[in-house]
Each structure stands twice: as structure tokens, then as C-alpha cells.
Amino acid sequence: MNQVDSGADFLIKRFPMLSSTPEVNKAIQREGLTVQAAPRTPEAKVQTYLDRFNEIFGRKDAQKKARGITALKALLVDRYVVRVEDVPESYQNAQLRKIRDRGELGDWKDLPEEEALKREQDHLTQTKEDQKGSLEEWVDYLASEKSAYLPDYLKYWAFAGMLKLERYEKAKKNEQGITIKQGRFPERPSGKQRSIKMFPEVNENGLKFIANAYKQLAADQDVYWGYNHDIPKETRQSFLDALKRKDFRDAYGWIQEHIPPITDEELRITEGENCGWVTFSKAQGHTGHDVAETLTGKGTGWCIAGSDTAQGNYLDEGAELHIYYTRDLGGNQANPRVVIVSRGNQVYEVRGIEWEENIDEYMKASDITGKKLQELPGGEEFFETDADTKQLSTIDRKMSKGEQLTSSEIVFLYEIKEPIRYFGYRKDPRIEELREKRDLKEDGLIVKQQLSEYPMGKVFLEEAADALHLIEIEDKIQNGISLDSSDIFFLYAGNKPVHGISVPRQNARIKELREKRNSNDDAPIVLGCEPSQVAHNLGELRSDTKAYIGPLLPEICEKLQEATNIKHIYALFPEGKVTQLRSVKVGGKTKEQLLAVFENAFINSTSIATLQETMFSFVQDTMSSSDFTTLPKVQ
Image (cartoon, rainbow, N blue to C red):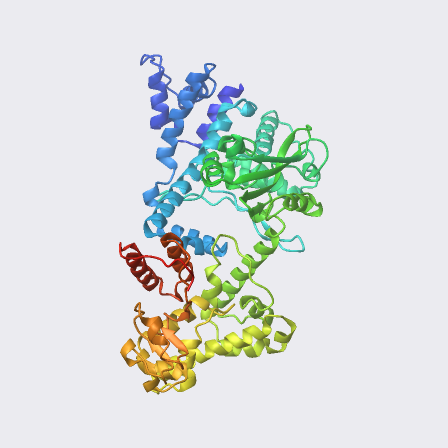
């Protein structure tokens, strides 16, 4: 039986209903055959369909071929790719957790609601584009000359099988090299709910191995295992059984483990001729297609293997992709091994081709990646920042499970030894969130012996004391207990910037407690004077007045000269403290020069910018009068 006939027979045995499907019937109709000439047997019908399949992929006219492939892609995307509106909320929450685990959630929290919604929508759209790209990768590959080794029936078999699968989950091994989790291809759901996962990657080496194996079996020959002679017989048999069943999922899954896109021999090649870094960036005119073209069929697992992702999520966002390629057995610079993603003065990602995108052992043993990071702005700090981000994720997971933290983890969380490094422009919000859930007193006791070893140990004790004092004040208020003078002084004078313990939330709590109190009653206690020694307007100023809290009217300087014991001046208490009153010498200046002096030497205050503007406006109005003149000499 010739290869074409065996191909149709192969597909009928694997897909018994194929000959009666709408796509096969449509292919027959396109042939325009008479009823008498139309194929009647299932084998003939399927062969007509394969001919049509080949006619699209094998067109000599480039434009016609492109139009046919574009139309096919549109049909497949509509039928198999997830719709944005159907992406489940659980997936969106999972993506937010990933952003959180990268320490970048702080950047999102500061976005206006409209911008945050736009980013979320963009992310959902990109999820669809990633999946679409992984599907189109197969269409592009099977339509290219690179896949000429595959007969049409195996192209159909592989493509139809791939459409039912998600990305391969590689086998996981422990430190001793023992497999603790078998690799597998998860199946895509068959109902209306479409999977959000990407389709399997093209493994060119693996597909070639399958094609050769089927060819050898058809000729009653033994399968040639090539360089994989060390594969155990029982493992080989599982592959042969999958071929016999025509089970693409099992056969292609076996391939992922035993016929990798980059062979063991090629993995050992890390430098030398035709090995080196290639940088892709929009500034240099590169596109996502340029990036993806070098990754197709290589099994990297990188999302940038999808051209739309490489373009939209990276190049269009100003990122540079630094990819290290090593030579294949043919001597070509063809095997991607490491990608470094940088943007501006920071390195954001370093990924390899091993499980969970770790760097493979041969590249780890070399200094190639390290040297490249030294060349890139922010590169040397990447691994330290990455380690801190992962450490924070570990602490987050332990606390969510109710597990105890070690003393070193507590030292890390409170930044007692050194500040926690983070990606993004804003500090990782998990730092503050996790501290809020901790018992400071208990944590302090655990790490007390270590505090003297670190410069920030003393600061931690002071800040922990402040935080505990605030908790005591809140407990007193809740239980109706009056605050003593130290409590009141803390609320008003204790609002100082601190390094470490929940600064924003702590200060917000202090402000909230102050707003519930009568500041006129608290001010004398904080300022160290009697209530009668606090003036609230210029008419109350006396020789024994020690504090003025009131409006800053233009005549205040003259009035304050009469209050010789005054020590504190506030426009508002406690936010509007006046820190400086300067006298301005007049005379010998033009009106414009004098106005500039007033602008520079005016009353400085902490948080009363509006009052300053009002008073300076008064000065401007006065000096703008036609009756205003300057003195010829300084007075």
C-alpha cells in the first residue's frame, strides 16, 4: 500500500468519524466533482481532504498561500482561542498574585481606577494574544519548508492532537535526580468554557523522531533510537505503544522527556564559535516576529516565543531582550539558552530553558550570564533583588498557612540587617501588609539576641516601642481610659518618619486618633505650658504667652514683639507649625527686587502652603498699589 493510501487509512483508524465531518464534505464540494466522480469510500474522502490541506500549505504563489493561511488562522482562532470576556475571575486573581509575588503590586495600587482597569483589560487581551500566538506557531511551522519531512497525514494528526492539549508540564525531579512528578500534557476542556492556557510548543526534533519512527515501522524496521541508546527498554516500549494507538498526547509527551528540542550534546556547548548574545529592541527596529522566529520549535517555555507577546508585553513597553544562543550540531547559532529582560536602568527577568524557566546546569557552571549582567545597568543587583522577592513570597506563604517564621526571616521582614530590595518603582506593599499581621512584642523577643549584631537593631527596638505604644493608646481609648501626658505627647510629637515598621499605616492611625481629640485641650500638654499661656488670636497675646495658635495676619510680626516669652507659633495645631520668621531689611531696592526678597524670606511653615500663598498675595497686592514706594537707603 502506498504512503498516501496508508495516510488516509491511518487517519480513519485514529478518527473514525473524520470522513463525515463538515470540513471534509466542504473540501469535496470545493473540488466541483459530479456525483458520480465524487469520492465514496471513507479513505477516498479523507484523501480528498488531505489534498485540500496540502493545497493550502503547498501553494507556490506566495500571496495566495499567505491569504489561505490567514483565512485558516482566523477560522481556528474563532473556534479554539479563548475570548476575553470568557476569561474567569479566578485566572485574573491568579495573575494579580503573580504580580504580587514579583513585588510589583505597589505600582498597580497607585494607578487611577481608569488606568488600572485599562491595564487589566490589556492584560486579558494579551492572554488571548499569547494563546493565539501559540496556535499560530503551529500553523506557520506546518506551512513552512521546515516541516517538509512530515507527510500530510501526520501534519493533520499532530495538529488535531495539539488542539486538544495545553502546554506541557515537565517532569519534576528532586535534588537526587529522582522523578517526583511525571511530566504530562493537560487536556483542554471540551465544553463551552475554553482553556486560558497556551497550546503546546513545536518540538521540531521530536516531530522528526516521530515521523522517522512511523516510517521505519511501516517498513517493518526497528525504530532507530539514535543517541538515546540509554533509554530503558520499558520506556521505549511506552513510546511504541503510543505510536501503535496513534495517541498523539502520549507520543508527544514521551518526546518532551526523551527527545528534547536541544539535545544533551548541544546543551554541553556553552561558548565558542557561533555562540553569543543577541539583543532585540524596538529602538533597533526589531519586531516580536524577529524574536519568536528564533525560538520556534526550541521548547524554551518562554512567553516571548509568541510574537504578539514579545511585541506587546516587551518591545512596545521599551524592554530590551538579551538572548544568548549556542550553536547546534550543524554549527549554526540556533539554540536559545538564556534571556535577560532589561528596561531603563533595571534588569527585570533572567530566564533559562530548564524546569520553571531556570537556567540549565551547563550555563550555570559558566560565567556567561554573570558577565552579561555586569555589563547591563542594574544587572549586578538583579539576583539579590530576585532573592529578596522570593524570600518575601516564602514568608507570605508561611504566614498564610499559620507557620512560624524563623528568627532570620523576622530579621529580614523588618529590614533589621538591610533594606529589602524590590522590583518596580514602588516599595513592595507586601512588606507593610505582612508586618501589620505580626506581633511586634513577640517578634522582638525572638530576635532580641541578634539585634546588637546589626546597625538597624537599635532602630528596630525604638520603632517597635513606638508601635507598641500606639497599640496601648488605641486599647485605652477603646476601653474608655483617659490618656496620660506621655500618650498625648506621643500622638502629637511622635509622628516622625521611621525606617521599618508600617510607617504609612502607623502615621495614618495617629492622624485618625488626633482628629477625634480636642487639639485646644491637648496643645498645652504637648507644648509644655498652661492653657492660659496659649493665645488663639492676636488680641490674646500677653507678655507671658508661650504659644500662639491662630491666623497669621500681616500685623503678627509687630504684635509678637510684645510677647517676649513666646516659643511656639502655629497657624494650625499640630500641622501648621511656623519654623521661621525673618525680618526683611527695606530700602535701597526697587519694587521688583523687594518683592523677590519677600518671596524668598517669607514665613516658612510645615504644611500651610495655602496660608503662605495668601499672605504673599497680600504683600503683592500692597506693593502693587500706586501709593507704594521704596526707600532710597537700607533701614
